[in-house]
Image (cartoon, rainbow, N blue to C red; front, side, top):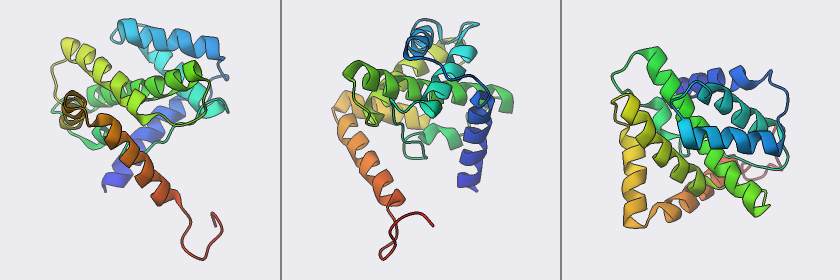
Amino acid sequence: MKKRTFTAILFLFVSACAFAAGPSKKDVMRAISVLETDVTGPKAAEAAKTIVAFAQASDDVMVDFGPVQLPWVDEKWGLGQEKEQSLKSLLVAAFVAGNIRSQIKNDLVEDDTYSGWIFVIDVYHHLREATPFTSPSVEALEKMQAEGTLRRHAKDAHAQTDREEAPEPGRKGPV
């Protein structure tokens, strides 16, 4: 059930971005700036779409998606369904934004879950100023950051994702 819920929320968010023309690096960096400066403002939803569309369409970045990277997606925060979905989508976009911003700045095509989570933590605080809610998983990420263990957790998450995506023994790839 959790996997279906996660997949449904992620599909809704991603499908909203599917029809957007492929944005440029300049476009995506402007969109990331919008989330940094005004994630609760009127331009945030469009910026989020640009960020996710770029991540989907560009060969210049790679982002791992899954319950390990986006643990808040299955949480219930006691808000209305539409409000929760909106906030979760902004946190997904924040994860993607932090992840790809690092890759673009470092000119390195390699998932950067750690940078994605750092951006999520920052955006989470801004979202909470506008809408009181608590995400236990984002709070846990923030606690790991304070303890100095978040980077290690990100490496472990990356390794777990690699293991889950690896073909079964005896197989050479996807069927």
